[in-house]
Image (cartoon, each protein chain N blue to C red):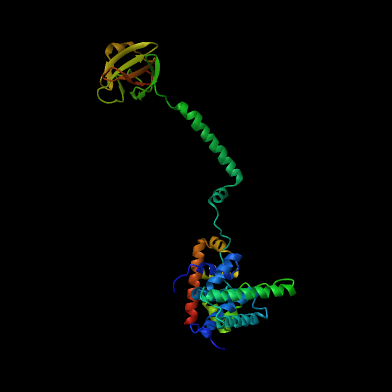
Length: 166
Length: 215
């Protein structure tokens, strides 16, 4: 395909944005919906076509441009689905761990890293993510402030990332 | 990596706690912010592992019990049972009644006197002795000084005025002829008035009774 806009490195753009589009689509329509990959591919093809046709004029950022295409396609998909199905597909609360963590091995590393955390960090993760309590509820249970809950979660994540990168 | 102002939305986005508008705003943002997207991706991994492997991860983890912060009012009320609180209330009411009704009556009011037919309440003079029953006729009467340049007038009564005298001291010795008029077994009272150098009445003591015990 001929590249009409010499300033745009379409390959690089797609490489950068594919994970973001993947994430957004899976979050919106659910990663267990078999068509999610098709929807992503359609979006990418659409983005490439528009870029090649010089439809991106730089009025907005490339991120906003791709976000708009992605959002429209997701809305179309849900509309079509809702005509066939009685219920709109429910999105997953968050994409699958093993897909995102990439490998079972990484998930195991993270599991061990969390196990080794100090109790005060582990308890926050347990109450906030595993039990699904609100920040305020976690704060009450642990006699800390809601902002301290966020601080502990952030710090716990840093420690986990540090351990798995060793 | 510099902290982005949208970072605080990551958790709520992943946990589906944002409203539609906030969700769209954040989605638009992370298409333009690689930092937020990367942090969100990492946070998503963490949440996913916690959710999927929580049973194994948190096995044996001691989780704080319902130690919710109790508002101070609840803490105070939980301190006693309702019956005990009722007793506390009754006791408090009784104490209040004593404070409001009885104590004011015990308090000696400032002495009153008339100036040009108007009732005046003045500061008091504290009488030191005699103020209780005594065994012998007191040789001297003493009161608390109100300072220099004040002169005093003392009055001793039985059923009527027995004797009065003036002095600039805060005590006075009873003359022999007055002592002779006093006898054991009788009850007397005394009072002191204070005057400024100009002769204005500035203070009056209470009238204090004393009795000379019979031999």
